[in-house]
Amino acid sequence: MSVQGTVKSNNMIDFMPPIQLKDYLSFRKAMSSASFHKVSLTFRGRDSIALASKHFKLGAQDTVLLPGYLCDIISAAFAGKCKLLYYDIRKDFSIDVNSVEDIFSKHLIKVFYIIHYFGFLHENLEQISCLCKKYGALLWEDHAHSVLSNMNYEYADAMFFSFRKILPVPDGGGIWLQDDSTLNLVSGGSLTSDILSLLLFAKRRLWCTNKPLRSAARSLARKDVSSLSQGRKKIIVRPVSHMSHRMIRSADTKRIVHDHRFLFDKWQRFIAGTRFEPVFSKLSEDVCPQGFPIWIANPDQLLRELEVHKVFLKIQWPLPEYLRSLCPVSWRISKSIITLPIYPGLSTADMESIITLLQRHGRPLSPDEIGEMIPAT
Image (cartoon, rainbow, N blue to C red; front, side, top):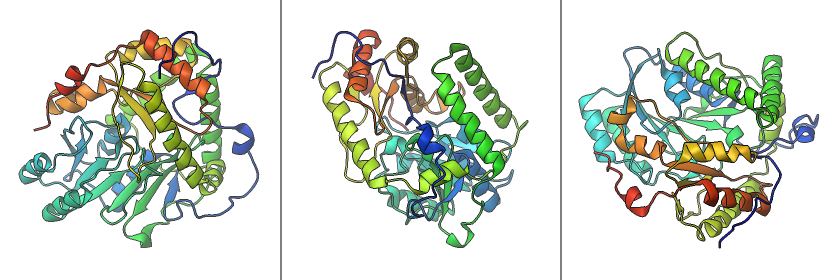
């Protein structure tokens, strides 16, 4: 399918689900607590990492092994608490267990941290779990992208969630512990959380209409991560807001999963008529995709062009310079991907607009360039 010509949609398109004011401010109670009922809800995902660090008593003598391809807030959440090491991932986002075991054999690892990227679950979890048990390490799974995928609760000591990446809420993280006697780590809702949630909601509304505000928000975000990384700021753990708590607990997860999978297949059909290659070509039954990543040669330039047309997507994730030599595949991936949005309400016109702009301003990464990525060692 080839889509060319003029941009057809005048709507603002974000990389996360849009929040409807009437739903967000509704005074209705949650319809049930069935959705994520075993997960303690926090204000953000970083709060959950901080809670787990406290719960498992991580200290300066402990070492956390992180994937090289990760959001900077994850490493910042551990900064000042413990030592950090990094492992590279493969170009298909899988984990080379033999390569990781080589690190385990040389260092005493307290926590092995894995990320399930874009909703796609690691297929070798049992092997990863055996590795952790062999060396006495805790296994922590990051489900920020895979919160609605059909995950296996058998292996992890802790799991982390970020609901705002898939659900239409401005705040909302979560933590699950294998030892469920300690799940009640945060109480539900607080006035501070509600105020902060409203500010995040307002920021998202204004973000896409005000260029100076976007620049200021990005600058503040960078300073925030820098302060955490340098130990000048600590994470204050807060509960989820009342508004987001209600929406998360009431989420129609079956419908959302269906819509995400439907839109993923739709992106597959759109992309098939272009020169661009999807990162994931197949969608297994257990996956609820968080987005539709594609290989691209000029992500930074493309994002700037898209913003002109009110399309606000995201690179996941720009990596710091020090990871370039430590994790070469992760580094290359971070420079070669852009994620197309997936959420209920994304229209065909929106998708056609993005494809038109992608073909106009994007430069594909060729199959040879994709194949040349250095394998993790």
